Length: 188
Length: 261
Image (cartoon, rainbow over all chains, first blue to last red; front, side, top):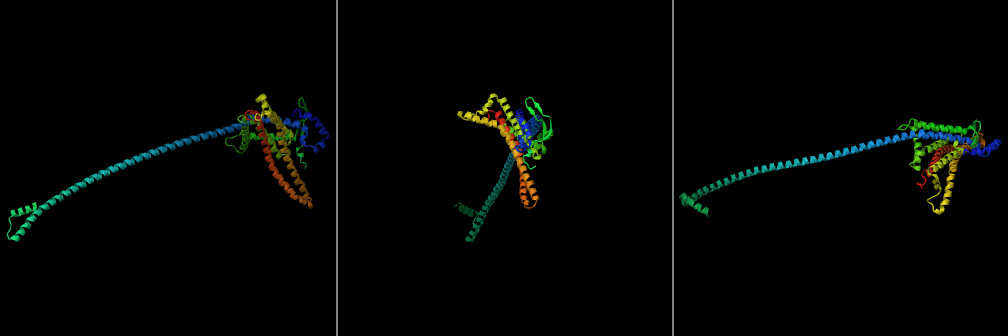
């Protein structure tokens, strides 16, 4: 570009100088080619310098910062993930412990309940036995008393018989007759 | 004063003796307003990048955040368009992006806009095109011409499609140069025209009488200038970005020749 433009338009430049006023008032100033060479050469120079600065200085510096940031963010994330997994592990362990404790307490409760039930059964059995003994004693006593009462009935019958016969016949029967009559009666 | 084209005039600030170089021929050596603007833009870019990177920290400050945004923008571009080899071409794309952005934005502050000079945009386009050609031939050798041999097209159509591809390829530097040039020049001409209306209609109104009718027009023109200024800032950024995107796309064509198609 810079190679051929000033050459081909060198004549134009000379022309523009002679008819300067007309040239300015007509076309765009951008097409005054005598100014192209200097501008382009200077731009090329600036661009090369800028490119070298960007490529050698600014980009590496920027990359270093951005990569450093990315690394630190990655590290922080990694640490957070590690802590999280640790916390999860701890939570799991705590849950397991809790479950174990619950199981143990349930077992204990069941044992206690069983023990209490056994004791109660034992005690009620004991009580039952005592009550049964009482009942047996009472029955024995009742039997004895009834037997005694039945014995008394024979005496009363003897007396009643003796007095009835005495009233009817006027004389007292012998004890042996009464006994025989009662025994015969009792035998019937 | 009101001539909207006058702002593009190259003014010689310091005339240096012309030189005649063996290959290049007659060169008009002079420091012009264009050189000065380029130097300022270059200095701003370098100072900015230096300020951003010299004391760069893991947790960025405001200036560093801006620099990193620009850096990341172009880095993503080269990475996503060119692929894993993009990092190698990042400095080139970033340099051209920053230089164009600096010159575009400086044009919003100065009376002279470097990127509205066709010489500059053409030079930038040719630098890019030249790099694409060099990389194309160095990386691929004669296989470079496969770029113009569309494998996807039917065999009978390939020469024609290839010819079209070839012309579109050769037109790339021209479109690249004209797009930037046209956008920057058009925007600044429009700004100047509307600003000129403000002055002309305002002067009419100052004369009193019927001239007072010029006031609404002047106000409208002023609001247009405000709006266009905002738009031009957007264009200044966008055109630099578009240049960078197209540079990446053209580089991708030759860097990943064969496997991208």
